[in-house]
Image 1 (cartoon, rainbow, N blue to C red):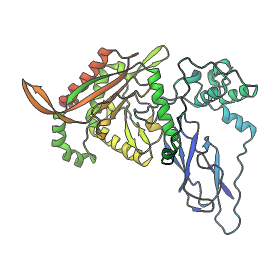
Image 2 (cartoon, rainbow, N blue to C red; image 1 turned 90 degrees about the vertical axis):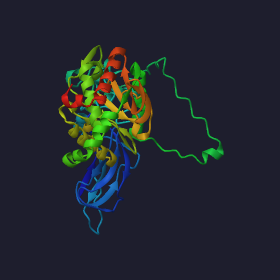
Image 3 (cartoon, rainbow, N blue to C red; image 1 turned 120 degrees about the vertical axis):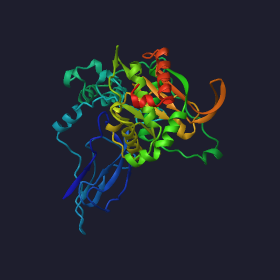
Image 4 (cartoon, rainbow, N blue to C red; image 1 turned 180 degrees about the vertical axis):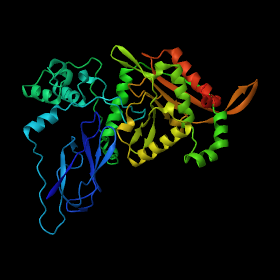
Length: 425
């Protein structure tokens, strides 16, 4: 008897994945719940575990192939010296196929970070009918808004698009005036070509590239700068870091201070915690702070939810847990969705100053940078102080210059007098 290996539900707004690599070969013995295959989506990399113990039968989805949730990847057969049972074919009744096709993929407000991160789904594309419909619309040239949707509230489903496509191709829409085809890459000289390596972009990296460009094309993005004297925070950290770690079981870093400072500034300047929805502005009276975390496959942005309800210790513990999960490739999609504002720290890589790209549809992102001693004037005297440049990139459609500067000043004030963070001032 064979047990099917299928693609699990990939999460809200994720409609497909790419086979990264198989950890086993046909005929290998596997234990129940042992990782079998790695899947790459446009948000995370995840592993599919063996549904039962036995031997790996035929592999039906090879490395690099694109699969959808529920697709048959292969099978586990009983371990024996005899012939192995053949895996079942992926043949579902027509009615089941129809229902699966009509299941609308829900949009979400997942965040992604500058320099790459797990990116959000395309917001409200193709009339908010879902990413699967949006993808088919781009490929077929059929405008979903021209169809009578059979889904809830008139929503156009994948099944509706399949029917419309079967009736005949629609005329291709005229390209936008600003859209220009990418120039073909000039061929390398033979000596150089022999030393080049061509590697296909992962789903995550493709999404990083697309979303960052989308953010630049959509938002009226502007960056404003300030600097902050880190003397007080560094002194507090130095004084209490050992006691803090002993009591809370996590290190006292800078992110807890910055997160608390950002939340205070967001409460004073709510426009930076808002987003545009059509003709409306949506002000969010909650604070889900995305923290950019570097991994081997790119920058991902897990979200500290309701960060205003957490202490500095709680924030540090949450961020440390996300960092470990990110490095191990264990972050879930839910943990990277719903952010209202993002903090990215280029300083850990040595960056002195940068202009971070917005984590759409958010209207603001704060860039931290390296701390270095610089001469500053204090009480008429020149002193060397540990200074850090701060950069706030913001959507000028929502946030005015005065609000952006005020936001950065509030962050600066809180960090230069960290007692404000404790006293909620």
